[in-house]
Image 1 (cartoon, rainbow, N blue to C red):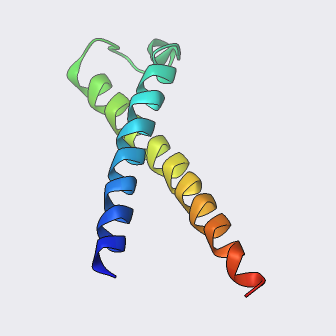
Image 2: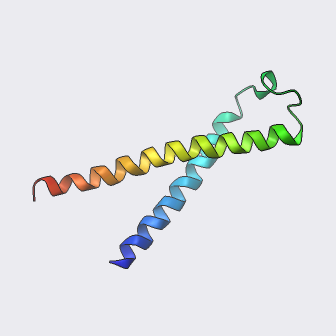
Length: 78
């Protein structure tokens, strides 16, 4: 039973890191210089990191919820 929790934890970590990387890659095409005063400054970089983590969290949580819910569908017929 406990190894199932370990597998879920490992899957969650991998999915979160994957979506952070994908979100960071996708946000590189977004023009933050239109919204911040100093786009090369440390505040703009921290903002970019925070936005990346926030979007990646939402996307990965949706993905994991969808995956876990689809795995639970097998209990409908049992």
